[in-house]
Length: 371
Ligand code: FAD
Ligand code: GLY
Image 1 (tube, protein in one colour):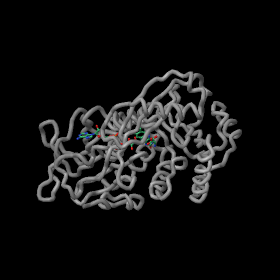
Image 2: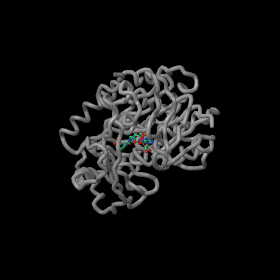
Image 3: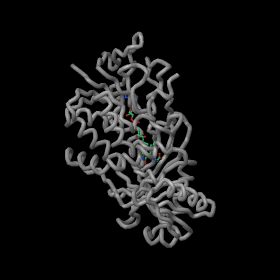
Image 4: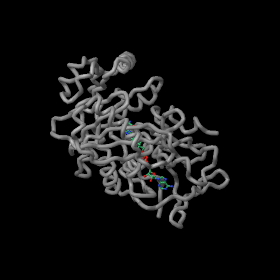
């Protein structure tokens, strides 16, 4: 079987790039160790929030996020049209809120930074925030409305991407673990998986938090990606108008999905691949939820879970070719893999098709970490 691009990992990153390549007539095979889309891409909250989640000194991530937001409506429309599936893309905007004086001061400083960056944000009093979202706590004294920030149901999104990829002619081999990347004398040969060797013109490693663990990768190109654990829970909304926009406090986000789930999270923990959902994490998330959305007290808990954000050393993704010709990376999306999905899919598929590095991807070359 001729394979142009072999992709390791069927998360949102591998599926998105694979979909765009298959659409352009490339022979693509994705090898996925488990079921596609069931790791970080499933665990996420689905926030598309370049403004609300802006961080100081992460301007290049902001630029990538803004470009992805520009691409999102068309990405979703094309995906929904080609699969007949809905991905619950919600465009009501987001509100950051503060219930304590120091949180409000912190938010004010971030607000000034958001304004400097030209982001469309509006300062709200506590009353104005509650007028927009009546379920918010009376203790909230300030807010920032970010109309450009949206959210999506990431679980529906990865399932739709999987369907679109397969419909476009892509091959998806689930429950197929890549056990070794074969590189001889600095030249890429193929990968070993399921007792056979897969050969391809190019290899794309999109294995999320596991991208740096693949046996056979030379140390010089091994990506410095680690798992950053996040724990979340969801409750059932009591009524459709209970919460409309997604709300962010300094230590919690609350995302109401159209199927009646309200997703709340998340912790940020350096715990390796530990999959325990812990009492301490749930306690602090629930306390924060209670402080900002008191009605949560009565709501039934639907699910608790955790996942692993692929974090790199500079919190930016690795997107591009490595020092070994033909071996590419698309990993390290950390807290923004759902946000970055359209831009990653478009820009990486362009690179894999014509070999030219799109200008937008230049700051994200994996070679910046080469040993
Ligand atoms: P993954 O989805 O983890 O996929 C990698 C795949 O590779 C897995 O399916 C795995 O099984 C497979 N794999 C690994 N090793 C092998 C192997 N040897 N052989 C074959 N397959 C292999 N981002 C946002 O934009 N907004 C959010 O609101 C948001 N919230 C988040 C909340 C939490 C708690 C977490 C954990 C993440 C969140 N993120 C969010 C980040 C986002 O989920 C990730 O950046 C994104 O899902 C990474 O996608 P991926 O495809 O690289 O990784
Ligand atoms: N971006 C949300 C998270 O990583 O938890």
